Image (cartoon, rainbow, N blue to C red; front, side, top):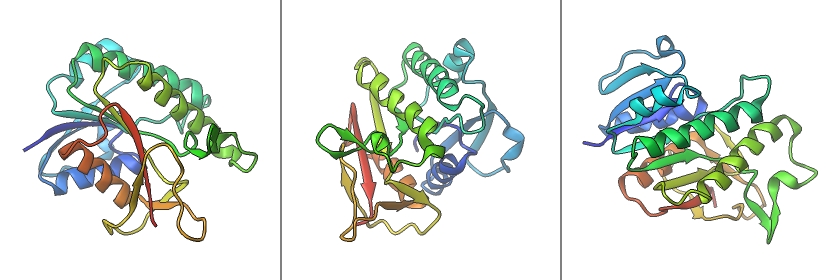
Length: 214
């Protein structure tokens, strides 16, 4: 049985990751700011965390087979700044705790739509998602600069939302994936499946990958 921690396990993507991991029989520790928001479940431990408190976070990350970060700053006034500060703390704690694997929920904004051209830099990119996308791009660059951490980032399709767990999707690396009509979508359930597949069977060590329906 795998023993994993999920930072942000009560959020939109974090909740899907938590449910997928529990369904696989993993022992899951939810590292969240408000543990009272999570119901008790078999296999689930709940721990209050402040990701900005690096020494405390270091102790909380020790001893797991893998740590998944679904951390975001969506509720903050300075989304990008809060995310960057928090992610720096997560990286420092992961290194200090000698985390075996750090898997990170990325964004679609840092995916290429053409060689050297990123989705986030297009005029059509939604303004309301820009700050969180900047944070995710920062995280990707930080991971690429720290090869001393065993990391993987999974960027979703351009759109991620509720849906079904189909298990049928295409995988890619750094380029935005679309279907035959140019749409780029993945359900949060299939996103969680792909992330937990990567936990169980590592295939993208020190790499970013992405997914979308074909």
